[in-house]
Length: 197
Image 1 (tube, rainbow, N blue to C red):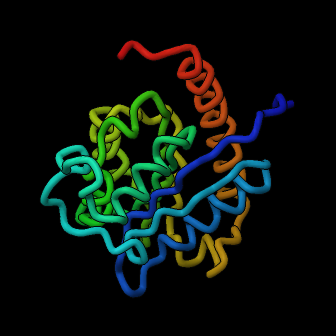
Image 2 (cartoon, rainbow, N blue to C red):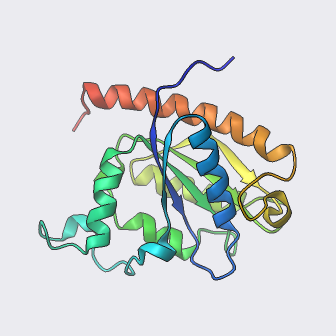
């Protein structure tokens, strides 16, 4: 039996801006599952946020001069307990919209866990992108938990509202979120006690 988890605040980062993207289904799945567990889930969608292509990182702007969208995201990232990354796989790697979304920030991610929900139209579920994402997330200071939540054949695995169409997805997601909650709660306690720098 899973112990009760205090409510968490989680940013759900979606890594696609394509017109016919399937990733929004996976993002809805994750948001629905987090909210069902009593957590706050905030979607960060680069298609609606209209982030600029990376020129300067948020920290490179003088105080008060960063674009509004970056100020909003910095404020959000500082208050959340963790990040769930929802990513497809483009040519065995990280989608450019995801990399652009991630690379604008650094310190705002520190001391918070991340988890990877990956997907693809084929049978591998985006795991090759997840391999590349692990290195990036660790470098950004939000290392990913050991579990992943791959969603193969996303077009048939989830409907347009993110509702699972097979037994595999909810079972995998439940175990994945159990682990993510554990890390998010543990790191929140440690942040409250202080960080090394």
